[in-house]
View (cartoon, rainbow, N blue to C red):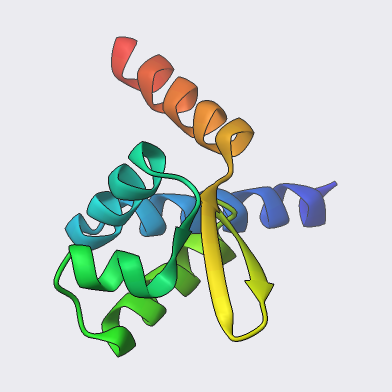
Length: 97
């Protein structure tokens, strides 16, 4: 039981970490508006270096907030809507208390 709680806490902290950075918030907003998007479209539109964009996209993907699909040499990103809904509901519930 303690191991399950530890795993859930670790996941929650990874999610909080992922949404606690202004660049990652901008990426999420952008992908939500124009999904799915190529990685290069994300860094070009947001004026990020490819390395920075890649790092931030990986964090969002590892937290389960984004999904990626590789097609040939291109990587497409789309939001994980069910997970984002749960995160927003949890944040709303927390703030309402």
